[in-house]
Amino acid sequence: MSVVPGDIDAGRGLPTTVPLRHFVVAVGFLVGATGLAVADGVFGTLALAGFWTVAYDVGRTLARVDGLDVTEAHFAFALRSFVLVTAPRFLLALSCVTPVFAALPVTRTGLVGAHATLAVFGALYQLATTFTQTEPHGVDHHCRRIESYGYPAGVLALAGGRLVGNPLLARIGGALVLLGVACVSILLARRLIEARVDRAPMLSRYAVAMAGWSLLTAPAWLTDPLALAYRFGGPGTAHLLAPGVVGFVVLGILYHVVPFIVWVHRYSDRLGFEDVPVIDDRLAAADFALFSTGTGGLVAADLLALPAVVAPLASTLVAADTVVFAANLLSVLRNHSPHTLAGVLFGRAGPAESAADDTGTGERPA
View (cartoon, rainbow, N blue to C red):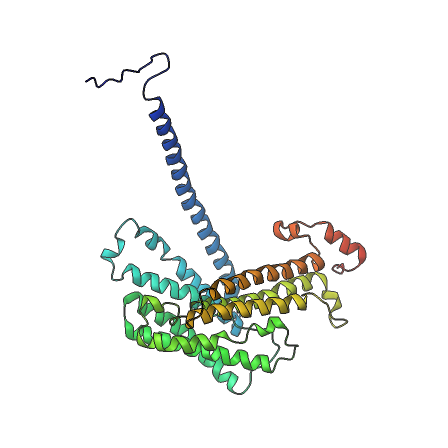
């Protein structure tokens, strides 16, 4: 039996033609994958450098302030947390291919736990309302003092305890975080009750998934704060923390910040003379109803034995809410901003600005 194929045709080429095609395709995929891997590292490095540049710029600005107020102090701690979060990512990435933690006094799981704690709860420190136009009084001062000192200390202790695997330190840190969150919920509730502005749906966002999250998380964190299942809270609190706490507050802040920036550039000459309509309150009310119902459904599905259809329906409501929310903010930019959407995104003035100037509704000339 011959090992040489009998159907070789020298005029048509070697018998490796088809395998060679496969080989060329494989080389192409290999080169493409290598390019993607290199691009991933390059763009990741650029993103990290950009983040550190922003952190340096903002930190340098805050360093010039004589005596930080409550909001600035919150933001400064959140900024430090973000910087600390980026530092160990190189070790975490390297540990996927090399056992770098074998020679270190900490484990990869501990570093991941500390990393996640700083990323989530360090960032939450800045998400406190400053838009309800009330002055603290009475018990507010005590709550603010406890929250201002206890919460950041608790985040650091909780992250440090998870980093070194010390349950006592993590338990103390978790208790301080829970106490700080409870104080924030009290402050927000009192501010909403005493707000001097109308309680529009965007202000109602601040009332208060925090209290529910802290109550459900307390038993878990006081019992086993190092457990992987309790990293972000007690059992069944994932949706209460993510959409319930962070989602409500972030969307509420955007509902304030975006119209405020537009107002400064477009309507600052009308201060004290007339009300300036910006947000569509009907869309905001629909947004609030969709988000509240959807988040409530997700939380209930986590905590209760509900039919399997509840979670998908609740997720659909939250997805629909994002469309309504985006439409509301984009309508603010479209109807009131002196720039077109392209001008807002790419930093160039559009026809809307010159049209606003021609009609006299734009910024007042210097």
